[in-house]
Image (cartoon, rainbow over all chains, first blue to last red; front, side, top):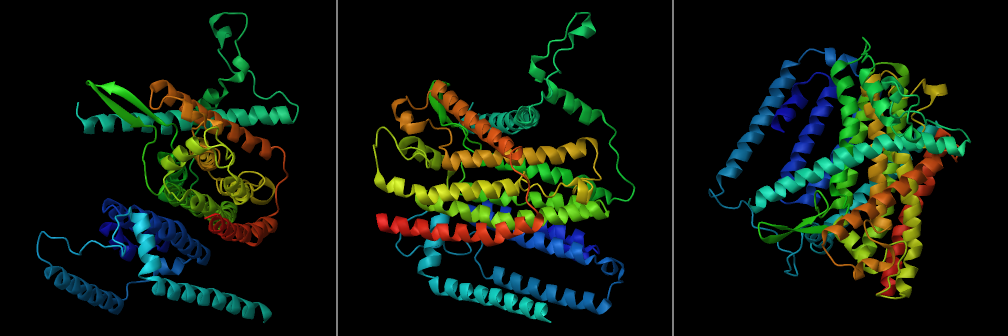
Length: 159
Length: 380
């Protein structure tokens, strides 16, 4: 998964990089599944690998980015990227260092009514009880985005 | 032999048996059935000659067996043909694409329950083998997730061919598949709402006890008005699901990715011999798994109609085998329906296909979810 993550950055061919991203998403999903979060892993594949990345690939192919593959490396961009990556690694190391060794990093989630559910039901219950406000805000955001897209494309058409 | 190795071995047997023997065998015989049924519908004879070539051994006549050896001949032909790779293609992706088409279709059969369960004596103790490869709690989602990976095969085939018409073909095919994937997923929501379950094994089990989703009557439970009321949204879900599945598997009346007059061939124009056959097999395997899902969700999976399973002894080998036979006969009946539709209906035009997908199917599926939820709320 990490190998393909590097592949995303290193590959000069946009299609190859998109495919590397796909494989690393599948790797992420398998991590979720190995942590017994079947639902989350499957949704990861369904949404990101199966839908979002297909659209990405589609658009990359339609744009036909040949000059992107030929462009030389920009030294400033590489340096900037390296600094950001190093900062992220530093933060991660700091956060991970604060956890005591050999213990669970986070306490297991507890559903409000205290019953033990399988992962799908637990996730659903949590989303629609404790985090229902967040879900609704995200729903509103998506609705706004949809309306915005329709409005923008209508404007283009009327010109 | 301990429990772990026993499970491993039975799982391996199930994988080999279902994926490679049953599904791939069915693929080749579906192609044969396609040709024979189309011949019957069009009042022709169809391939009826290939059998045992006894004349080679000096006999007077060949034995033809109604041409049942035709798939074997087709397979040999595909393998022996020259495997030609055009010079202008992007090699790596060109080779990857056919595999990406077939593998997801074969992977999805992992969650299909193809029988109840078999209990056999082993080392003095009884062991139960569930007749499903992976008993996942997210069955239908798994199928959609893996099946959606099949799009990559088509995208890559069109792009790596590095030629105009295959690219057009793949763009068409991909946009069709993405559009209908939404209706496909949404049309299942009513079933999942009614069953309250995401596990295909449990869904089959419930239907075997209380009658199929589309035939909600079992001799033990008797008549239940609520379930007949739920038949309205479930029937609608069945129709929309089947239509979306036809579009998703690129079958007529939605077989627009393949069009000789507009696209020369389709996304697989540049492919030859076994690589072309892999696309074909992927399409048929997707069709078989799709039929399997439909049978499992709507037509009771491996169960007998009218809840007759309640009167059979549970877990014996013969009942398990009977259930497997029932599952596969339903599957084959559904495949014949697929073929029948193909040779009966004319095809859609491309804009009609998109309009149907986005304006009709999507809205009907959404309304159906609301309708189901409303009826469920009314009943409880």
